[in-house]
Image (cartoon, rainbow, N blue to C red; front, side):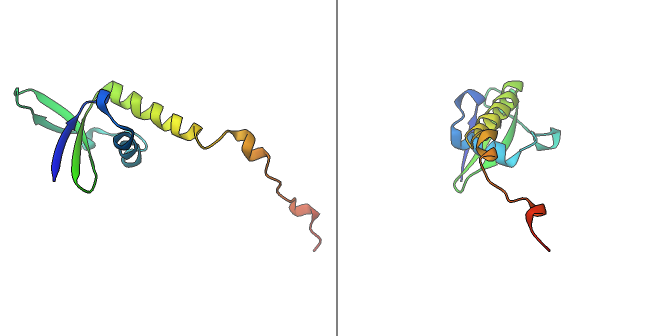
Length: 97
């Protein structure tokens, strides 16, 4: 299995979707993995997996904002409230007992 460290700037839609699905309410301290990189710097990341790859996405405030904005954009893709109001739902009070 491949392990890939990804910065938020290089997130693909696939990885971003996985992040939002795994952490719909955002990630917490328990979700963060800390490790040392080759330069002996401490890196904090959250993990998401596909069938063949483990992605460690570096944690930052920008990552949280990117996830939140992506989720909002995804919600917008499903249509607006106007499309819901076009549905004709029969009123139960019209039914006779």
